Length: 548
Image (cartoon, rainbow, N blue to C red; front, side, top):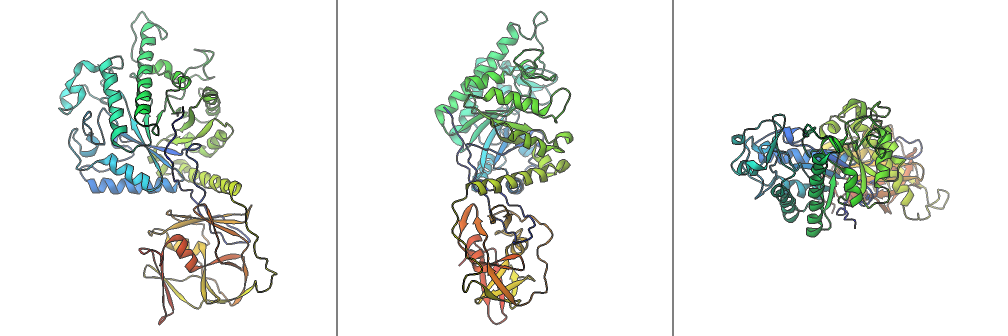
């Protein structure tokens, strides 16, 4: 039985597109259905790669996470997969795992707050989902000195649980006590935290952990290792299901299960195989229904000689077909070759109905806009969201025709001054029936960076304007430019306005091919304060206040 993610009130970011006939002022796209699409980014904490640029400073760590979270949301994503157990340790209050050294520099030292609890709360405030990413077996990335671990580390207390390989330590997957420890670790998180998912990555047995000299990759030892990993996966799935049906369990295995040269059922590839390399039988996990979702790490570009991108998307689509397991594609934007063609890869995904969406690795590459990937991803999701709204919007009411009696209005230009949070702003304004009307795009531009910022988008196909609150405006270069406005005639706008996906009934007029909205209507919809100072004929917008 499927266990879907808690409902995500995900935003859909607006994108402003120049239009010849009507002023662009987008509203937010419809809330995506979390059962159909989860747009995620991995946030790596091992090596402090994506998160925790500072240590021993709780407030700075909180501020950093919130800033990154807002940036992620503005990209059009709705799920964060945060590495909260990178090395047999914890970024949360645990009775089984020591505090992670990435927090303070010393394993076992409390950071003075519960980072995961804070991260979950901030994520959910924004209508996004939080998946707790755990590496099940890794103890160290480098080093085999037990004395370097904290006194409460399970590896230090149970050295017989450990296997070593290439100067690193791992929990031995074949031990029953290790399996119980990992299952209990998962259970502790599911019981104590409001997580939306538990996520394992592609590290199982150490890569290429040697087999007995007399045995091959399909021999008894290799098969036993795969069965031990399978046993853990099945038990983790069962435990999560017992504790909370709403918590999803997902794994991101290596992108290649087996090559077809190793097994006719494998993919037409020539790369490293998860089945043999780390003893991870991802195909079995899907077929047995032990995971709710699978995220193969297809970290190659199209046309790659050893592992063509679409070849693998097609193969994994076939694996999940007919099952209840969701398929997400792991997109390796940390590689220039992938980052440069990310839109092409996302378009390929659209060809396969089994592909639900994507996970991006990793956050640092997304935010640094590696090879333009961040911009491309943001644009892709904006366009997709607006298209979805257009397809599902409710039946429109009949607009006023410009030829109807009393439809046209006299519009008086530039008769008021405007301040935004106390700063004088010069914008085109028209007074119609004693009310001030502004271009939505101009206001969005001026309010970016304030508590009441919003973005806009124009959908020409169905003549709709969309506004999405809570995210910065996407600049196109035409906003905020004062024109030589003159008194003129305003024609009722025939465009429909949507705010955060909901259709609104507000007063709007078209003047010189731009759409103008009544300021008080916009203040009410975006919830910002507006006051009128009669002595100076000045309008004040206060983004620290709610609409009155």
